[in-house]
Image (tube, rainbow, N blue to C red; front, side, top):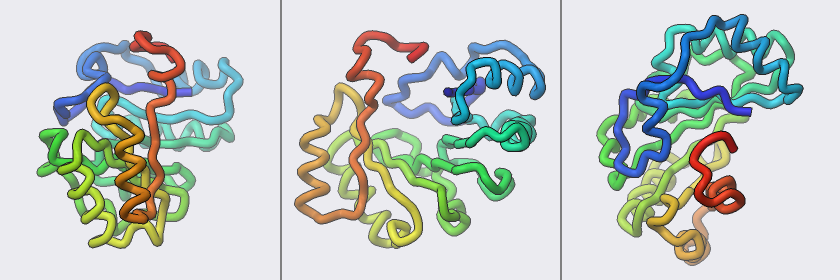
Length: 190
């Protein structure tokens, strides 16, 4: 399940969760943990917006780990990830130029990646693909963790992206937003 925290310090041009910039209701860490537990799902992903903007996000992740949950964090990659509790799988989004936020990437995060973490690049066009492929090659992060290339929904055809990856034998996975394919038109709650 997702726990979506409010607030984001980035404004990606293709953002599909702008409602997370300001919407939401205050809740304590124990209240969130109990609500998560009530769903009976052992896997929880903390996301946003940008979850690391919330001062209690690290405490929330630790509390979920302490209750036996498998915990994932999806972060926009502009804030440090070193303080994320051990045991949390960190999914770091590297912002491509097409996002309008590539200058906000915190490149130091790549040096702190650990087993179980993942990188994600959201690709808007061929220029983004070429840029992301160069980042993968230059930083050799594919030897450390899985890397996902995801096409911007309704902007870049997933098949075209897959063809570029195959043609270049790039060691990445093509990831589609499956919920948008299964439930087209549903923007929240899937």
